[in-house]
Length: 331
Image (tube, rainbow, N blue to C red; front, side, top):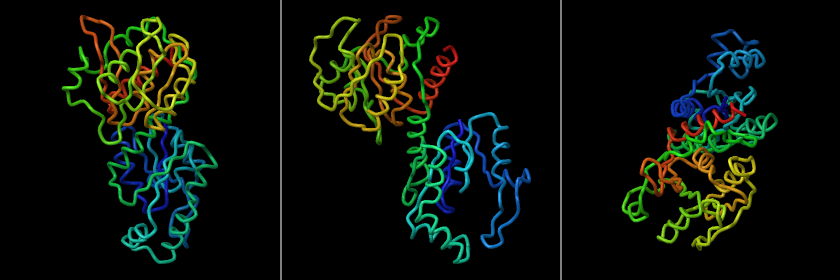
């Protein structure tokens, strides 16, 4: 995967890209440095006081890395990327940052005009629809990087229907979070969504148990069945309903995109599945914001059963993505 971080000079690309790459575990590529080191320049612009980069040759050079990358520069969006992050900053703040660099007034004005007319964003949208803008005026780099991470994990996967084979079914049977034998034990714990995280519950019995105990999830994903028989309990949840068809043993594209839509909306959404929702935990963990909690019911395994709570962090997302890639390779 290649993530391009672009924006007018002074919007924070260098600092934020370093934080982003470190948290993702990706290699960071400063395109300006790479272009100079590999002599991928067409010349020098005396008026703008900057190098003229050969984008075609630079794009070929980036392909040689053959690994997950964060590439950054004010022209990063001109290269082939899976997702483009555009940074923007309030004009007064941007002027201050550019003046600190000692830039001449003419160059500062040119860059302020580029920010006003959203040049980087407009050019990026001409190459891909996966363009996302983030304001860096007041947020610190860590907070901005976390906001970007949430979008990266939510928007980076365009899956087809994924069938879970018998050889992978065992991975879905073991608990991937803390197991609570009762809702009372969960209520006594300190597990709650943090920051702008969500509380997502997968399964009818889990949703029924939580809501009847006074817990208020943001999203529930149910199929109106338990052990493949009709579930007759009343789930105390009020919100918008999204319906989707998903066959047993499948993570359909429809289910994935419906969960994505629910997470983007972020509050009081019931995903009603016609078919089966057992595998919805995987997309929920991958796409939920960091700091979210995903619940599901755990059948008895090694004498452990009950309500499982997964605190969504980078490691849980990476584990889920690793499993997703194994499923994809076996299709």
